Length: 323
Image 1 (cartoon, one colour):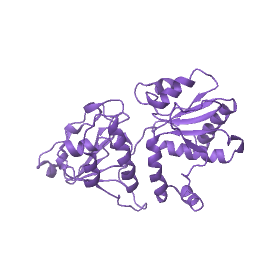
Image 2: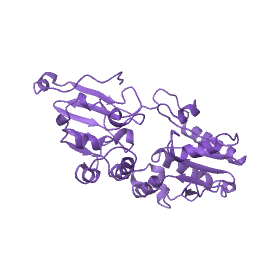
Image 3: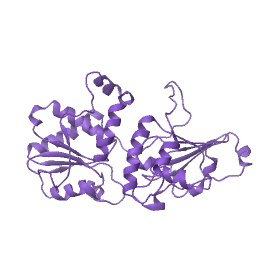
Image 4: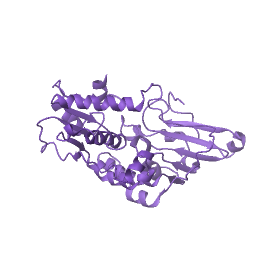
């Protein structure tokens, strides 16, 4: 699905339900032709569902919200949050407090646990001044109803950030990732990995911790993870092992895969002993501010160092560096 601008108004009168009959309406209120503010409106036979309620990270204030003014929130029966990322869930407080929506919100237990921490942190650095505690205690209902995998959906709505790209096999990408890091630190350099505080970061940490365990010559090379928020959320990852893939569940029989052996917290740049090679994973991923930006400016001009960048939205240092 693609949207080149605000969707046509989906506000409807009571008589429109009978006219539509069996018509299924799916309209993106955000992320239709952009990366950010994911929000998908869907109605069928008089029932309306909203999938996700995110913000656009490249904008601020009302401009970051989905196109809520194109719908009548009071007609929405259920709002389903697929996962905790801000571009999928950060406008939920606004939608619950400032619109006429009276339906229920569903998300998994693990998503709810992390989202509460993530949203509290987001509020600290944004202009949102909403009753977060009330919202978390009174509005959320979990978990999702688990569906059997033996069914054939008529329509599949999927996040497709990399949908137009051809990917190498996972094992090839992992080897390329670890090869770059190993080569850089072997030359005495630093590796900076700007990453989101949650999600991909934990996956990369698993890869690094396992790689370090299999290479004793690297045991004296520190890996730092700089995110107080992620440190608090790590307890959620450790708790919901049963929601992980089969490999992680099998490992948990002997050890908790998220109890890292070779990764230490990065307390502050003032106390950082910048001597010798190291690997530092820090946020934000776009290098626009914060610790990742500080380290980037410290290390960028030394050719023996490396910066491993990922998806970068809008106009920022990370996008320019990647290009």
